[in-house]
Amino acid sequence: MPTSHLNADTVLVSNVIFSGKEDDPFAGFIAVKDKKIIAVGHKNEQYHWIGPKTKVYQFDDQLIMPGIHDNHVFFTGYMSMNRGLDLSKVTSVNEAVTLLKEYSNGLGPTENLYGFGWDKENFGCIPEQSVLDKAFPDRSVIVINRTKNWCWMNQRAIDQYGFTPGQCSAEDRAALLKDMLKEKEKVREEFLQFCQLLASRGVTSIKDIGFDEYDLLPVLRELSNEEQLPIRVHFVLEPVLQPLNIEVGKAYQQQYQHDHLQFQGYKIMVDGVVADHTGDMLEPYADMADVRNLREVDYERIENWVVEADRHGLKCCLTAEGDAAIRQAVTILEKCRKINGYRDARHSISDLEFPHPDDLKRMGENQIFAEIYAQILLLIPSYQESYMADVVGVEKEYRFYDYRAMLDAGITITAGTDLPLFITSVPDSIYAASKRLFPDGSPEDGWHPERGMPIAEMLKAWTINGARHHFMEDITGFIEEGKYADIAVFDRNLFETPASEVRNARAILTMVDGDIVYDLTKEKIHV
Image 1 (cartoon, rainbow, N blue to C red):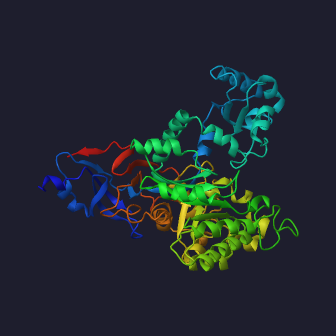
Image 2 (image 1 turned 45 degrees about the horizontal axis):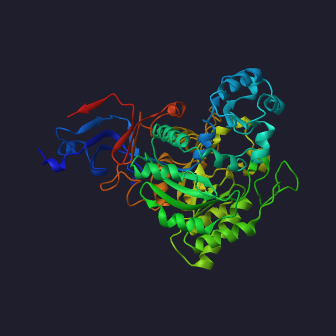
Image 3 (image 1 turned 180 degrees about the vertical axis):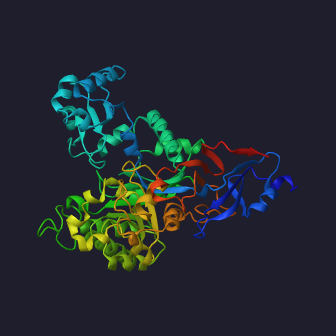
């Protein structure tokens, strides 16, 4: 029997442990005590760490892996889709107005009225603004639809916040989101619900994006001071209503370098999306002669921002989708090295929808991280309905989401969701990025499966690579002695689950700093 100081608080045992250090999982155990992993080894060694108060979880063939890091989320997007009245089951405009009136009775006389989830198919139409103008003359009303691309609004809301129903991206709604974030108690409740949702997906760490300044900070500071912050939050700023503010970034960099709350720099939008021809392309679109981009990009402004941020040691993520935009993004980050000198900057490019192989090689050479949305194919119902061949030609469609080329170029790939575009799902990412399938299972053998990402690399993208991107690899991201016990467990072996079944997989246990924050297990053995 070991001495008491060696007794673990918790021991996890499985035939399938993915440590992040090796590609193949192994059968063994993980011992956890006082927030950290104190031992990892073969199954027959587990008993050295088990005492009378140790909780032992036996997982058989269920996968244990490092906790998941979602490297691209918007809490404000989650907030927008959960604040106010849920209209997802409402089938008519009249019913919606009646319910909104009833809901408004619980609000102050001029307090904003929010709703979410309405669907054009359920309503049979896009609802008219005039209906809300008549029903609610004295308060702003904003009701976002299920697909987040249309806001049913009255004129008061349009005048107050400066965006229109059909132009209501998160960036368009930046002023509204700032107002929503002022409701501190409500935001605190919503953020804790957000964390619980993430925990149910195995998430232990996120990079969250705020507009101009990080208006979520008062809530996060309070939770951190109370030692109640449930996940690690790395935050970045995206200039939307104001130019990029170096002074704010420098102040945040000095103040927020805690294990659970860290400032990570800036996110800067470059181009739009290839699907609607606002992605900046090297050659004209196949379905739109002589058009390389329907929206101009101010590369000079972006370069000035990025070079100045880099000069002050601040990290940048450039969001680029078309191959011309990706090329320019790489060039800008190369220029940072030439002008400011080499440092371990860990800049990144996100989205990377249609990269040119030459620029992926340059990304690898310049140690530029990639941030991909591994679930992205799930936006398109089937291969037959996909747009890729239409916009660039059949002979070039393989270059979309070319993860194999990224790996071959030596790029460190991280994974994110652009939440609320997706909710974090490692099983969905394996289905889409490793199996290369659309939601209906097409095409039968996968869409350019040779361009996909092996499952081990997919799991690394969700774990250790995210930790590396945020300079956290010394304390988390691996299952290894001495690391914080940030751990996720899934209900099956994701390495061996058929494509037809993998999306049914679920996280069953999530641990942050050795504390169990989500637990669906029933097979817990107390020794």
